[in-house]
Image (cartoon, rainbow over all chains, first blue to last red; front, side):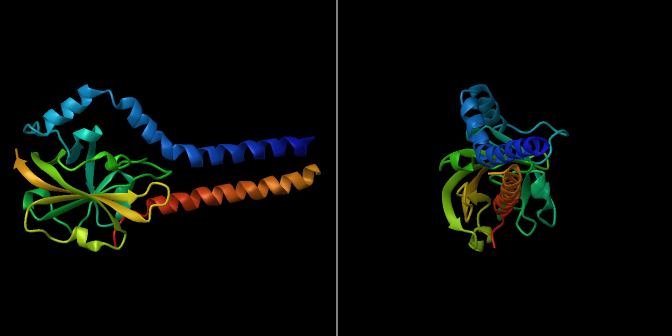
Length: 189
Length: 34
């Protein structure tokens, strides 16, 4: 009788773990679908990348209105910053210095944060995005969205024009490649 | 099937599930290029 209860507990645990394993990668997709009508938030973000950021309060941030996305950018020598959210690759440039600024984030992990770049595939050529960097707004326009192998280090190479490169893992279930969004600087505010 | 046999099968499945979760998380965490 006692072993029977233990077996029931084990079965519940197995079902719970596997449900989490299968369903949690889908949750950000559901969340995005539910928020898609929140046009006010998208308008606010779109307005934000067209205006000078308020002085003294904003951390470095990446804003992508088409994704309804606004997240802080973290700096670190190693990948530890990825656990907080977006990580600017340390050997690449920063928006104020031109060249190629590379910012990466997890597509999805079972630990926190979940899917900071989960919806990066919703970004299209022509979309505008903004980076708040040292109290200035750098507005970019997306020029390419491509999928490359995980060995394609050329996406981090220096560029002649001020460029923003964003990338994350893809495809979602077997992330062997990288989804790379490249944007060129339009204006500094 | 006896309860004891069922226990060992379920325990093995639980360990396999946890291993799968850890492996899936490790795979999802490899984001850098290079």
